[in-house]
Length: 87
Image 1 (tube, rainbow, N blue to C red):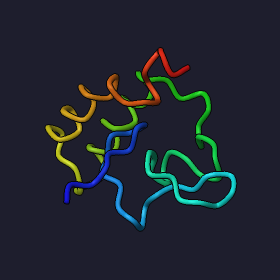
Image 2: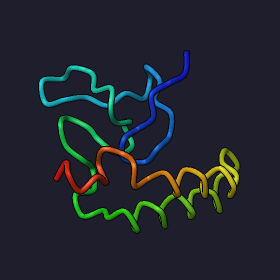
Image 3: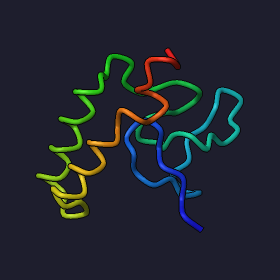
Image 4: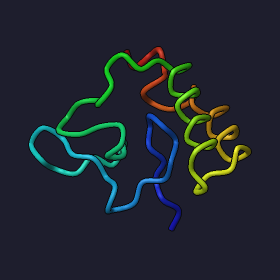
């Protein structure tokens, strides 16, 4: 089964990195790096800021290639957090 993608950063969500809602229930839409206890960890983060953050991650971590991060970055605007209609 294909994992859900975090609707903020675009990375896969597995059981161990699912975020939590305010009532401590699991949230299937966001990972723990972006969302915890019912709120985003960085309220001021913009779409462009997320793209920059992902590029920096690719530069400093061997887990992601620049190509993978570029592909995720292209698709960020389609994610729930960055959709203007959901604001």
